[in-house]
Length: 107
Image (cartoon, rainbow, N blue to C red; front, side, top):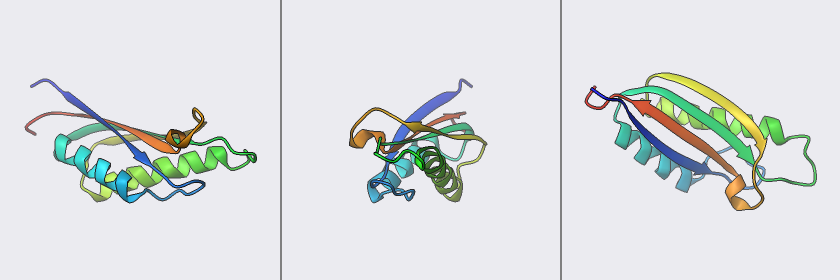
């Protein structure tokens, strides 16, 4: 059976590592679409550029780790590649985690 792939983004408040309610809803929908048949998840965190960049890498990593933990807590199996990529493009959309899950339908 061919593999499928689903993607979503989770958003965060400024300088905050915890997922927003909107982000949780997006991830819940992602888990529902993939079912419990996840094979591999790629979770990449980003931050919005600020005047102080000393925390950017660690915050983007913590965001990605929190999203991975949320997905695991929702029963999403498989292997996880989790990383923070620091500063993304300017604006509120930069405060996000991109999630991509490869899965096998019907498993």
